[in-house]
Amino acid sequence: MKVAPRLTSFLGRLKLSIFSALARMIYHRRRSEKVIIFESNSDFSDNPRALFDYMVQQGLDKKYQLVWIVKDMEVVKPFRQEYPNVLFIPFHRSGLNAGYLLMMYYFSIASFAFYSHKLIGIPYKKSQVRVFMTHAAVPVKDSRDQFWPADQNTYILSTSEFAAYYRCLSFRGGIERCRFLGFPRNDKLFLDGTELKKRLKLDRFRKLILWMPTFKHSTGHRDDFHSKEKKDISLLTAENLAVVNECLAQANIGLVIKFHPAQNLKFVEDVNMSHIVTIDNKKLISLNLPLYTLLGCADALMTDFSSVYFDYLLLDKPLAFELTDKESYASGIGFLMEEPLDFMPGSKIFSLQDLLKFIHDLDESRDPFRKEREILRWKTHNHLDGDASRRIVEYLKL
Image (cartoon, rainbow, N blue to C red; front, top):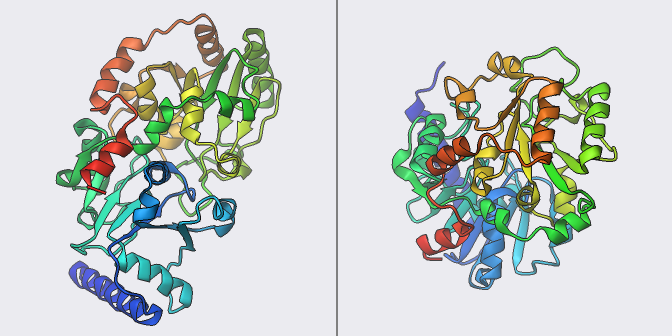
């Protein structure tokens, strides 16, 4: 028997109310409005992490109890001594157990919740501010019906009216909840990356390309890619890599391949060549190195249908789009816009020769798409600075 949506919503809210009340009774703690909770995927990263870093720098960890909800406690284990005023607790889906009740306790007493992937806090609770920080300024892939109702967020963070239009297509509404304050992680783009490059041994290169493909076959239940191929990036054959590495070596340009954290690594391969290396989120987090500071160090970005390039527009540097598998995406999850290539102000790479030409252009400082980038940058970003975290803290009067 089909349950009416209104009844389903009511039952869900009733369940949350019961569990949060039970949690407060069991833990016997006084209600506090000085609690802020965070969530991200990967754990302890993305926009919530960048905002958290700013809050700690401003001493807000002494004014508020900051609480991180994480899926893997091993990831944050090295940071527990570094942040003595911060609480890290594991995420629990449901169940009448101590872990779930502890999480629900903080969900219920928090006055602010910041999240990028899973809604945390108590939906529709008027005294609580829930900020969906997202991880995509403009979603390229069709992400409709993959989110909770827009009105469960107090605010939806965005970078501009143009970007908010596409974000709210995925929510099927919510434009009135958007706040155009910018993304905290973009603040990291403007930091000095000299030490980061040294620690990752990337300072030996004259120029640097960061290749950040989105995931195709995922580690979870979601596969955005329709293909029977054994490899997710058809351009990355052993023969092609050898040719590309030689081309890079001649110009002393480094290529860093950073796979998406949701990418199923069975369908890709680590590369460790003289001028091509791979790096993952776990390494960056373990070294406490922000991904977006690495991105800021790059002299050019190469991606496919990942929304990361909308953030990179802030730096006004060359872009390239690896599109050899476009049809596999089109027949898989599909795209949010009718023709995504119209939103890609950079070199279109459909073959090995296209990639080699992009490397040669970068080597000789040719930048044929600069005007196209500038047009899209002004559409995507109301603010062209590294002050999003400050704007958010001031807007919310933290």
